[in-house]
Image (cartoon, rainbow, N blue to C red; front, side, top):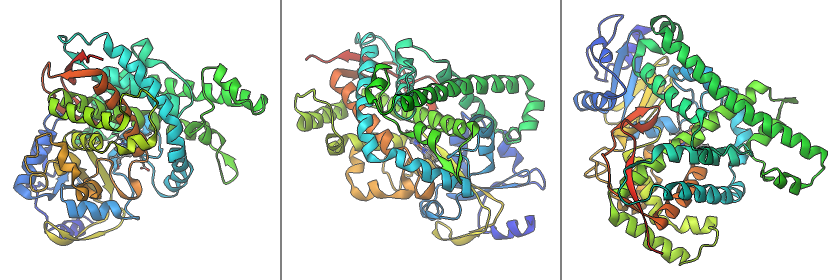
Length: 486
Ligand code: HEM
């Protein structure tokens, strides 16, 4: 009951709440643009673990490292907050949004498809797709023009996820645009607006108050589903043809697609209780991975490049490391080479600290959750409340990261920092990011090839980060490029 909930969180502070409406004053002012600074000033006033009543919902907002560590490690509290329901019409109830038995079954089916042996095969795709990216960048590398790198990187990461996980090709980079990628961008912007305007979380209220936006949302979902359906269809046909041609792997090569069968083939061939997955089951996972697998990585890569352009010292250190590991060799990289690039890894971690691709994530409490050692000591969060972990602010905590706004990759040379789970940009515990190794290798190859080929110049404006589900920047991610002398 509400009475029990109020009693359980009496140790937490938060803005003044009016019966039924809650903290309406604070809530009505929230927009995607100001939400990070609004929450930061609330933390300053009420502490890093605070409560916010929104209508009849009890929201717990946390940048408390001890508390986050306990909740993320918990094997029972794995349900996502109800606002993820806004993703259902688009992503269905796939790995990101499901819970309980369905989530367990899916995670078990999908985990082997990101095994390091499979990642090793993917290196070739990372390599040749990033070569196409270098060609696209070369056209713009005149040393004077300001480039918004983000749209180009999005097409690149889309080509990568389609060719690796889905086993087909869409050639987004060579076509220079992709309707799917633009639709994702518009959709996440729209969802971010609905996410912070709490009354619009509800689909019906949203439809009544904003019928035109609802119509647009439906159109966008249609565009994205048509794209993912065609990707599934293409691979399904290829698989069937292959079965006919018995095991002639080369036949596959002729069609421009490798034998590489991972994620999508596993879904197409999986059975649960003797039944194959339905078309709808497959589509929701493909939609989930297509989105999570490209937009997050695009955000991280673009912010990193923008930061590198403003820190030539860091570019030079990356170059020195690459030189030490690869010499002047243009041979294909191995996983071992990439694992040795420790400084480059610190650069990526530091960039994700400043601009985490997934800035906020949440959990729904289905049972009471007892915690200890938080900034407020011990306590209980009652069943029925929602938790929002504010990564952007956890990762800029000045107590943990002195001069938190400065880009200093060397902070991550401290081993303790690297292994601390509560501050991982990939989340931690049973619901951590399944694609983190995939993303790391993809980003390492791409960054080292770009830095080796171009000098990144501090042209254009600084980023204006905005947490549109995936972190992006209002004015793009600007920089200049100049080809390095051979
Ligand atoms: C820089 C890149 C990436 C970052 C920072 C990132 C971050 C995250 C975070 C924080 C979560 C937890 C979200 C939550 O609890 O709501 C997550 C989950 C997930 N990520 Fe990633 N991610 C990245 C790349 C990828 C890639 C490349 C893929 C796919 C190939 C992927 C697939 C997923 C999936 C499917 C989940 C849900 C896992 C589950 O609940 O079992 N991510 N990611």
